[in-house]
Amino acid sequence: QVQLVQSGAEVKKPGASVKVSCKASGYTFTDHYIHWMRQAPGQGLEWMGWINPDSGATNYAQRFQDRVSMTRDTSIGTAFLDVNRVRSDDTAVYYCARRWGPAWRCMDVWGQGTTVTVS
Amino acid sequence: QSVLTQPPSVSGAPGQRVTISCTGSSSNIGANYDVHWYRQLPGTAPQLLIYGNTNRPSGVPDRFSGSKSGTSASLAITGLQAEDEADYYCQSYDNSLSGFYVFGTGTKVTVL
Image (cartoon, helix red, strand yellow):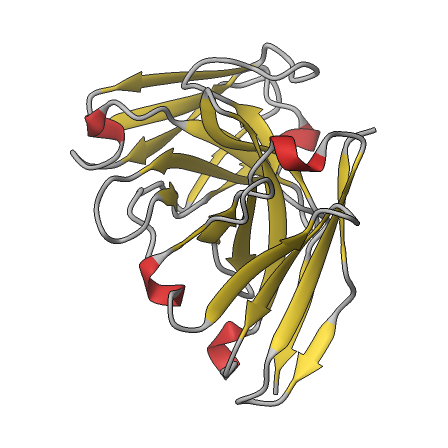
């Protein structure tokens, strides 16, 4: 079945970098944009940006433009999120999700989430 | 950071109907961008519940319905069940510089 499987929990010190992976299966990886969101403890969802797995093009939310990088490796059907110079307020669950398709700007398949703790 | 406003909580007894509002602005819902809804059960990832304002993905019961008017949208749950207790988020697209995909503040539904 269609699924996104994310890498495991991370604990980082302030100022370090963290890399989260998101492996796709059950569909053609390059056919659907991958979006990244995060959810701080007890808070709502925050959109971070997307990557087009086919071209590698990216689009980041303005507040993340200087610290976030989204990449992909089409040979293994995996998308990656890098967050640099992490701070305590980057502590959150990070989700990848697949955009349904060109007609709808929504996400139909989500990864299980990766907890990143900055301490 | 959220540009779509939802009530923090709504509650209802089993079998009742509850509605959740999602209020935006002229740069998102009011600009005729679609609204989508997600349900997030405790400790799990969000799941798509309604897409394109009114459509249900396969497997979502018809107890869930969505609507949109002007700069707002609503999610209705009829025949409330214990398993509906969760957090619900609206989501749309925004053409301002603040970001392109935007989520609502989230609503906790409690089944009394």
